[in-house]
Length: 161
Image 1 (cartoon, rainbow, N blue to C red):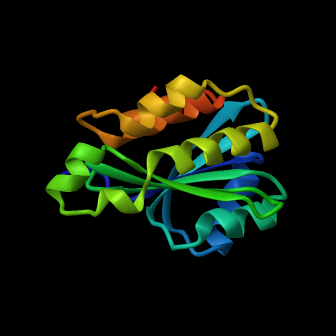
Image 2: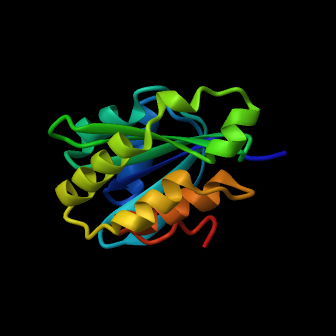
């Protein structure tokens, strides 16, 4: 059985991010990782909708979240403190098997949003790497999420590194 939890990444300490995620309604916080450069990740069994903007307001920094559907599909939601937000779908081919309407997650707006998010975060993004992660296919959506984080300029998470 795959992962049906979620991951949140923010510019914060691990301790701060765990506290903020719990306050925002994440249940079952079961792991965390220091990604370096002032960035951290937390993993939870149940992630509420709207987590990215809530954490961005709380941290005052850009936040990246992924909600996994049995490790097959990842729903990305990323937000900035200034109100910018973008969403994406990971593992589009597999999402179609679940009858998820992939047309509701167009790649080009997600790519533009990801580049703006990375710039706001002070990161150096790789446009083609982002596109590859957004359009790629992997056995596990977590692998695509890590590829996307790397393309955004962040280190891969410790859970799959």
